[in-house]
Structure formats: C-alpha cells, structure tokens
Image (tube, rainbow, N blue to C red; front, side, top):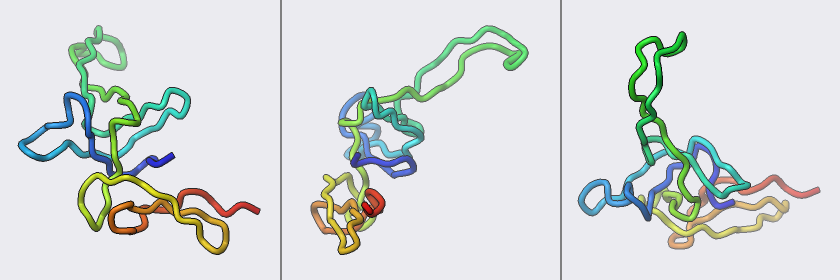
Length: 116
C-alpha cells in the first residue's frame, strides 16, 4: 500500500482536487479500507448528514462528516518536493522496505517490517 494512516496526501481527482487556484486539496489520512480500496482524508469529501434530535445529539440538524474516496485519487506528499509524488520501494540490507519518492529519492517512511 503506497499510503499509510497519518500520511499527508494530495487529492488529484474529484470535487476537492481544485480547492483553490492552482493548488490541490491536502489532508491527513484518517483511515484506510483495504477491502474496498478507499481512504478517509481529513477535510476532504465532506458531506452533510441530517440527524434527528436524540440523547447523543439533542439539537439535531446537519453534521459535517468525511466520506471515503478512492485510493487512486490521492498521492502522498514528499516533504522535500512539497507536492504529490509517485511512490517507489527501496529494499534495505536487513530486508526491510522503505517507501521513496520517485522524483527525488527521499524516504517517505517504512513500508513493512523486515521479513524473518
């Protein structure tokens, strides 16, 4: 998986892609669903959910919630390039794998633990 929970990502496609002039929307990954291939990103894909008054929500009304978007519609942000980049894999001597930026080679974090 090229994206992990907690990564800063950039949305490339969809209604949130062109949030402001020339810049794509960014946010942190809140959750990943491997089975459906969807990610929930903070502040992206927000919708209104209409709720009735209840004990938990005595006022009722409209809540803003983030809905999952397709994993293929986001790209991790390289800290050095400061833009969404494609991800490559670099195998270390101990067998562990790192995610690396395809453009500059900067490490984006550990991909997986070393295999024993």
